Image: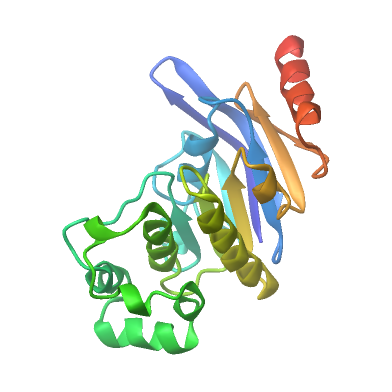
Amino acid sequence: MIEAKDITYAYGRRQVLNGACLTAMPGQCVGIVGANGCGKSTLLCLLAGARKPQGGSCHIQGEDAFKNRKLFTGRVGYVPQEDSLIEELTVLDNLRLWYGSKSMVAQAMEHGFLSVLKLKELLSRPVSQLSGGQKKRVSIGCAMAGEPKLLILDEPGAALDLVCKEEIRRYLRIYLKHGGTIIMATHEEAELDLCSRLYSMCDGRLTEVSPGLRGQELVDVFTNDNMEE
């Protein structure tokens, strides 16, 4: 379980997050939608422990990870929108950086989530030679080191073709089925179908909305939020 309360963050004088709150339980996929530049990526970065907040709390399984940042390690996997892989290295070498050794990678390939991602045929290839969908699979594989119970994804289907998008969604369904928790920012309706909870971000705050909203209904939510401001 993760519970974030009153998270604040500013870039200089620009207040990006202004008391954002959300809750996600095991087996849930929580989606965050909102206009470009509204703060979704910043929030995910904070919830993943990649950046320190300026205020608020983030309890993971009952403990405040903002106060004890070691709690992020092994409990949270993070896949940013831009790939963080080292292009010059092979897939295996990238995975080894996260898993610690070749034997740990091999074990995860046989018994862990790496077996689901079908990366064996890619291990010897340099990342620079991979397609966008293949890189995304490797990025998710790296994030799954330590078998975290929480996976944070920033627009996982961005710039991928339809086949790759569906493959990524299939992997995420398996992760949820095994009790994992997902928090993701997305603009894709097919990804929204994975979500059991949905939040709209506006003016640095999150408002929970019906997970069944699509298309114009979601646009209306953004429009009404902005009009109220």
